Amino acid sequence: MEKLGHSIESIESEPTPLQRQIDRFVRQMLLAGLLAFIVVLAINFAHSGSILSALLFSLAFALALVPQEIPVAFTTFMALGAYRMTKQQVLVKQPKTVESLAAPPR
Image 1 (tube, helix red, strand yellow):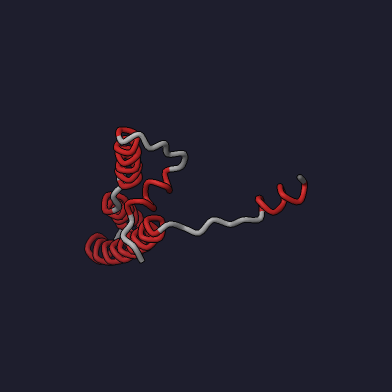
Image 2 (cartoon, helix red, strand yellow):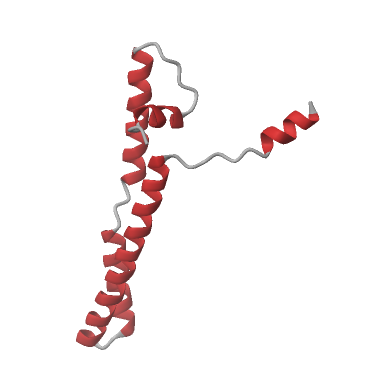
């Protein structure tokens, strides 16, 4: 039993295609936000001459640029998929199952 427990613990799950797409999207949004922060900081500092004002303005702009409802939308879509599967009398234990069934074949 101990060997079985250790072997099960050592299994690493591979990220799903949706998780990889979300990771890529988050990285792209991070780069876009960082670039926008730097550009707005430089322009605002050149215009106002105050580093504090330019820093606050560029931080507010960068935070407004990043969509914060994306995790909620993904969770909602996964829950809707699980709900549809239960309507067809399919029991789903993990949300990854719903995603894997909906993913196009590789």
